[in-house]
Length: 268
Image (tube, rainbow, N blue to C red; front, side, top):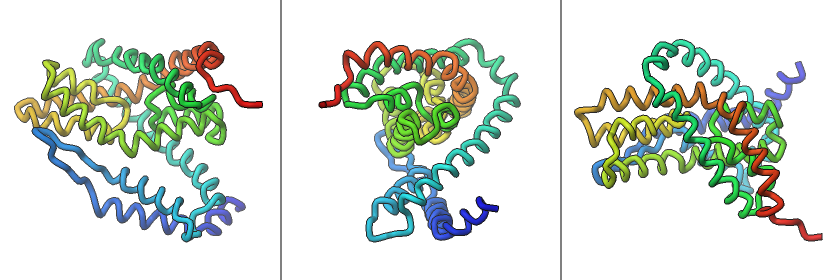
C-alpha cells in the first residue's frame, strides 16, 4: 500500500517519463551515412539525453533528488524483467550456442582483457571503488543487475557501473558504429570476424555496429546478422557467468594491488 502511494505521489515523474518515451519512439532510428557505412542513433539514446536534460534543468522542479531515489528502484525493477527475458531467450538458443562452436563461446574471455587496461586508467583518473564497478565488464543490463544485487546502486561500485552504463548508452552506439566501419574499410579482418565482435552483450551496440557491415557487404548480410545476433546472445548469456566467476573477482584482486600504487591519496 505504501509503494502504491509512493508511485501515485510522484505521478509527475511518470508522466515525464511517458512523454520522453513517446518522443524518443516518434524520432525512431536515425542513420547518418559515413563513407560506406553509417552511424545509427537509437531511441534509447534520445531517452537518456532527454532525461538528463530534465534532471539538469534547474528551473524545472519535476525531477529532483527525491525522484532520483525513486527512479533508482525502478531501474532495478526494469532490469530484473529484462534479465528474465534474456534468460528465456538464452535457454531457447542453446542449440544455436552449441552449433556456433568454440570461437563464439570463448570470445567472452577476450573481454576480460580490458580490465587490465581500464582499471589502471580509472585509478589514475582519481576513481576509487567506483573503478571496480566501471571496469569489471562492459556494464550492460545483466552486470548492472548483478552489481545492484551484490553492492546496491547507492554504493561506489553501483555508481561506477551506472556511469559506464550511461556513457555506453550515450556514446557506445556511435563508437561501435565508427569502429566497425573503420575496421571493415582499413583492415583485412573478415566481415564474419567483425560480425562476431559486434555481439558485446548490448542490443543497441550490436545493431549499431552490425548495420554498417550489412550495408558494406550486402552479399553476406544474412550471415553477418546471424553471427552478430548469436554472438550477442552468447555475450549476454555467458558474460554474466564470466563476471561472477572471473571478471569481478579479478577486478577486486587487481584493485587491491594497484590502488596503493596508482590511486590518488586523500589530502589530510
